[in-house]
Length: 566
Image 1 (cartoon, rainbow, N blue to C red):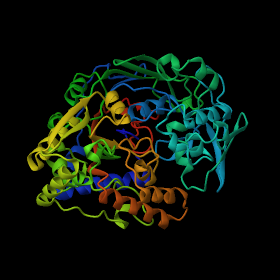
Image 2: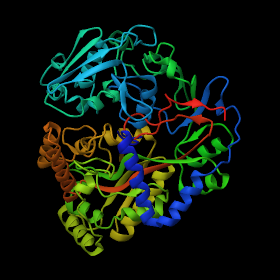
Image 3: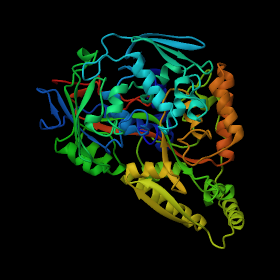
Image 4: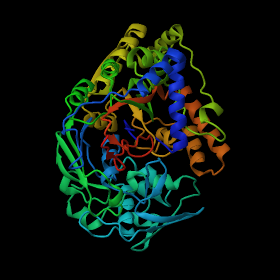
């Protein structure tokens, strides 16, 4: 998931992830000190005095804020965490994630996975927000639309496990050849390209959501662009979308599971990337949750004795390179020079300075499972030692190969959040002082930053990726040459072969060895520079209960939330 991607997994993975993140921090600042802080924070009993703006128990309304508005809500094209989170509330696929972060029935009330395919039996009471039944035909149409080359979906690759998916997306077969068919209105048959062990998790992802064909065509190219350009089949429906200003979700009376939905309204009248502004909204009783805090805000939270919560969101953050031949970052020696002076521990402990973040070492985060234990325990990351002298030697070679007399100027693309700006300034100073490079910060609003990444309009970019499903493949295939989310266009034949092996094999040991080789190649080729694995700290009104946080699936999830009278 791009830039969490807002971008947790099942209950076991989530617990392990949280433990590892906090143990890693303990090793950094002292175990006893950290445990004392966490004990004090978790034992706080102070209350937060709010007005009814944030929590209105009588109407069942919760007021929240969004970091930014969704770029668009077409499930065939959505890639960012904001859009996917909103879609997780207003749409539902064959399966969904429940309050325990386990896969549960969604539109499909039961299913069967075989070696060569799957069958899903849809519940007869699944309805669109106009009262029309959701049918197997709606899934067939949606999947064909997402895989069509004309859609240019960056997530088309997630449908490649369905037979002929990749050939269709490459323009070699018509969309009708996709291995999915509606046996009847309530029965969906899927044929696999090859045996795979994780299809259940895929169908819970937003690209696999249904779309009704007649409505889609009635929007004349505007599907997902506005509140009236969507039909909803999820727990909530969008009733207001003032672009750049306000989103409002209301309980969907046609949702099959409406009895379990306890909130009536999720109102989001505030958009801001600024943590101080968000904290002030919470302090004034305007919002019930502040989902992102900087180190500057943490002291005030502790002093006010607000309810501070934490979790590992599963995402990894790194510097991404543009490998286009006309970009200087395509030069291996230049990338190697940057790698040899970058210390993720310094970034985490001296710049970000928030509990829960782990220094980055790999594209594959610590919480991923291997064969018998965690993947990174079974396959440790090859170590890179800082070496300023060697870095400067590589820079000299790069300049010679690039025909430059002076250290080059490099454009660093970031979004407009304060945290991103701080990190960009850190890299600007680091690479300027150590290597004499001119780092030009290209700061863009979230939507425009995504567009520039997709158009390869960058040299370096601060980039984040969150998991779409709980398997190392969700990270490994990001750098496959055919993946549209591989915005820098890294291309390595051996890497691609190892991804294909991990996709096709059912042998756990074979798959993990393939991921281990991918990990080595990314470091050897300096395909990225790991920065950190993100831990999140946030505050919430104590009356808001049942909110689920996760790394895999829409986050945060308010479909099980309720307002407590305590």
